[in-house]
Image (cartoon, rainbow, N blue to C red):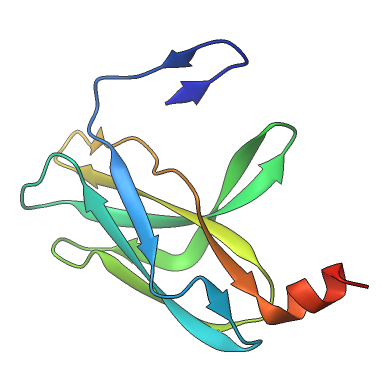
Length: 118
């Protein structure tokens, strides 16, 4: 999906939806990410990204080791010390058919929150 100031333009591909196990974490905690696709079927390969704020949108940085094969739609991150946003995307088939990127899902770290209150 592309969002502009006036219009939302939707593509015809299935949407990915990411959820997090916890939204507020203590420094160094772990979080599990889960991705689902609105067009359920077997064979999806899931990819995970950190959403980095850029101007009025995000850019996506692939998480290391974060392509997970079919039927494994979860990914765990260990030792988070900063607030972050995550997105997922799924692919299947050859040539690859891509889902849309999910909307970002945010994880807030108590360490970042205490820095913001200074």
